[in-house]
Length: 296
Figure 1: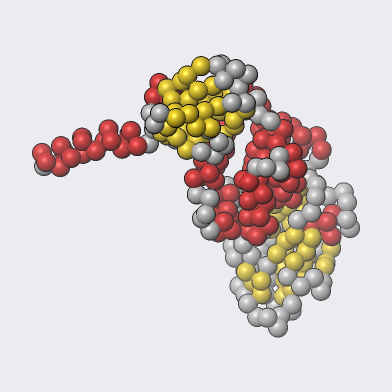
Figure 2: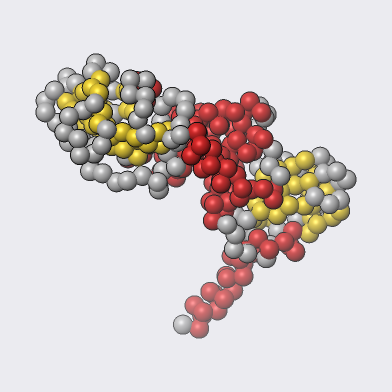
């Protein structure tokens, strides 16, 4: 038992040291770090240990993410030993920002993971009601609840029996026995604009698939947000980042992340594309758009 305890006590500080790592999230101007006896340019997405010395030139700055998903801003010229910052990175922070920076950390750290599978798994684990499945019809769980403000998004499904066909039924409330709209001949996808265009005054609707062979799903929920409600929702999120002086591209990307997590799929893609337009050199933005399109 003493030997096991000694091994545990020996490994604990080593593990803690191994976890003291930072990733460069934003780099402005001339920011370098010391590697051996050389100064090396620090790049966005680069991971550096807490033993690193970072050199900030005049009129330059860097935002670092700790492995506790907190951020540190260095914006005054000088040399900084990250060892002195590792405990600061352990302080509790706003859960909204820490969730976002955990996502950023994972994106930079696991750039070659299977994107479509991981995206749906990691981005859609909250914000949706859970409803029962559909016998003979495959509908992915992220469609249980969809939020929508603008843009386009398609509801997709697969029929186990390839010879079968499905009707897309739209109801104004969950208790309705008769649909307000029936779309047929749509194959295995229906655009949300096909619904909102024919029922323009809806604040929300429920949809259900019904096959010619008599199989049907439970009703799935979609909410259509007003400009005022959507703007407030977005601004409340962005307030969490006011102290970091994010660029417009970073704001668009972070908001896209938040919207995707909350099942605003059409709006999330629009914000990701806006981020790429503002900063075409950021490979993460293009990678995200590719993953998103493949996933949904």
